[in-house]
Image (cartoon, rainbow, N blue to C red; front, side, top):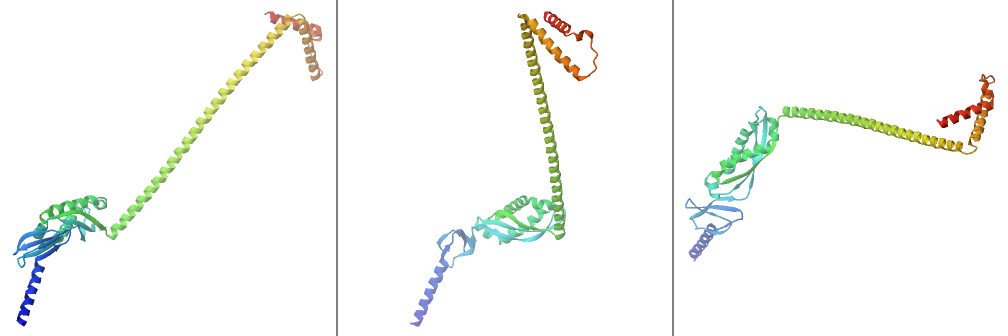
Amino acid sequence: MQLGTILALLALMFVVVAIAKTARVVPQRSAFVVERLGKYATTLEAGFHILIPFVDKVAYKHTLKEEAIDVPQQSCVTKDNIQVVVNGVIYLQVIDPKMASYGISNYIFAATQLAQTTLRSVIGKIDLDKTFEERETINSQVVKALDEAAQPWGVKVLRYEIADIQLPATILDALEKQMRAERERRAVVAQSEGERQSKINVSEGMKQEMINLSEAEKTRQINEAEGKAQEIELIAQATARGLERVAAALAEAGGKDAMALRVAEQYVTEFGKLAKATNTMILPAELGNVGAAVAALTKTLEVGKNA
């Protein structure tokens, strides 16, 4: 009885071990490489699978997800002989589990080593200043070299990113001084440009002001000239009309007598003003006779009218 129990237990254990060796559940985005008697048999994709007990075994397990692998920092020498310390990150993905299993023993180690050597080679071809400006170029060159080398490994290198570039303290101090000098130079240039533009604006304003003043003066003179011309024309027209009326009045009956009377009044008035101005006067003899003077003036007006 005990022997039978022991045999039953052994049989049960054998069944459990056989099931454990036979049944395999592959997670999503994973792949298992199966060997049959030490030789590659198949690649199991996501799902439930049954293997042959003690004949088939899962030799390699791979994730098909994109992996981010840190590349340890390393010293690189630039083209201008400046030593920098660079570290980065590789992003790769297994696309052929069979090749990733048998093409290379450890594709992660190989990818990091190749990334380091390629990075040293690329940085050695450029100057220090360009290592910061051309990160995209450096990254693309490293990816290109890694992807070509990783094809036999069944691995696709998606991208490489430089995480950090460390410079020696002396170089950092020199760069800081250079940047400070550049900022000061830009500030001086900006200030001079501002002053220059300010002077240009002031001169343009003064120029425009002078133009405006000259235009205003020109307009004023034109307006005054036009006003004087109109004034002279109006005075001439008024004088002409007055003379026409005087001539018409003289042609009427009694016009000459009225004119003589008017002349006599004006003569007396002006003669009186002249007498008030000074006590001593030297006058022609005929001016003392009012009648003779008025007759002479009347005769002169008639001659002017007939002319």
